[in-house]
Structures are given as C-alpha cells and as structure tokens.
Image (cartoon, rainbow, N blue to C red):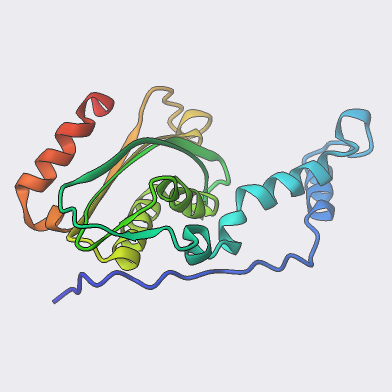
Amino acid sequence: MKSNKPAAVKVLTPKQSQPLAPLVQELLIRLGEDPQRDGLSRTPERVEKALRYLTSGYNADVRRVINGALFDVKYDEMVVMKDIEFFSLCEHHLLPFFGKVHVAYIPRNKVIGLSKIPRIVDVFARRLQIQERMTQQIAQTIQEIINPLGVGVICEARHFCMMMRGVEKQHSGAMTSAMLGAFRERKESRDEFLSLVKHQLD
C-alpha cells in the first residue's frame, strides 16, 4: 500500500565554484554567433548571473526560510492563500513556465506566517522543474513542517516550451493539484477549497 507520508525535504548544492560563463560563450559560438560583438560581449556573465538566481532554490534551506515563523494557535478552520505568482524553468528545455499557486491548509495546533508560504513556493520554483513535481513538493513541505490536518495545493501555469516551440499553442494552460490529509479524504474540504479559488480558475 502506498504511504501518504510526506517525503523529506532535500537541499541540493550545485558546484558554485565552477563558472558557467565559459559554457555560455561556447554555446554562442556553436550557435553561429560572435560572443565578442557589442551586443553579446557581456552576455555569458549576464546569463550566469540569471541562471544562478533562477536556480537559487537548490541552495535554499526551507527551515531557514521559515525562520521560526510557526505559531501555536487554537484554530481549525481552513487557511487559504491565493494567487501566489511564480516563475520557473522547465527541466526538459530550460524554457520558462509561469503562473499562480493557490495553497490551503487546515491547522492542527500550529499556523505558519502567511509571508512564508510564497517563500516556500519560491524555494521549489527556483529550480529546474516540472509543474507536477513542484506542486507536490509545496504540499509535502507544508505537511511536514506544521503537520496540519490537511494541505491542498493547486498550480496553474503556462509553458513556453508549448508556446514557443512544439505545438506552439499560445493560450493553453496546465493545472495540477496535490491534496493531502483531509483534502484527500474529505470531499467537503476539497469543495470548500475549490470554491474559494474558483473565480481564479474559471
């Protein structure tokens, strides 16, 4: 029987000591460009800086991001945070995908500072990702940290790998969800969550 126990949060550390700029310069050459021309002379360094930022989630420790913002509260109603914007990079083509995440949880004995939920989203968005995995990671992390009665996460996104190449569909979006605990077991909890974010999803 498959366990519903959330997976441990893993922190990956890239080899920061190895520069990326020479690789970007070689890529420009192989694409038939001149990396020494005015418009491209500083591009390798810019790309390295951008990629370090866009993948900074590998170096993020979720516990440090939360920084103790957990509070003992006698509250057992649903907490919902909607419209958390994110940008990520698809691991298949290194092209962006972007959209919004909606998060809900039902506290058991603790709540988490509201500003920390978008930070958790950023930890996983700023990695090479697929939407399905990112959605699950956000839900599992909240479940692991505050042990609520349940967690629900809905992610809606548009993918440049579909918009710029391949099928080239400009208006198609993808939706993924992760439902743990009460959100998986109780239809009433799922329905309440969906009703609270419905106008965003329509």
